[in-house]
Amino acid sequence: MLSTVITVSLLAVTISMLGMIYRVIKGPSVADRVVALDAIGISLVAVIALVSIKLKTSAFLEVILLIGILAFIGTVAFSKYLEKGVIVEHDRDR
Figure 1 (tube, helix red, strand yellow):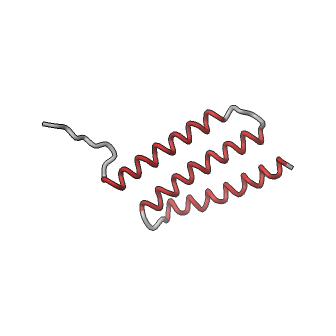
Figure 2: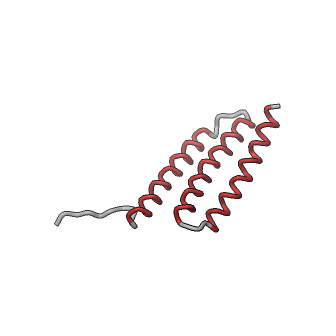
Figure 3: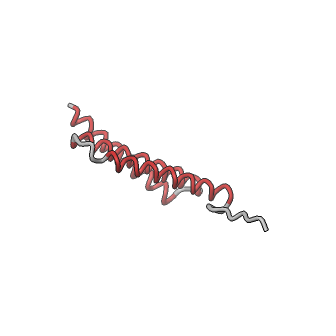
């Protein structure tokens, strides 16, 4: 029973990721594309977690953590770029 539920969940998350990829390519604004990329990162974490449960291993936990951190950093960088136009500010007192 659990194996069937995990398989259906994997299928549902994969189909939703296809919709998010469409939004990244065709999004009406840059902000929509950033949100879709963040959602893809979250969905990728979910897919890896479901595969880890299906395989009955904890070997992928480090991968989940790494992808979560990278998705967060990417979202922060994109949002800072959208807000100010630069990612790294070089404010120097002369």
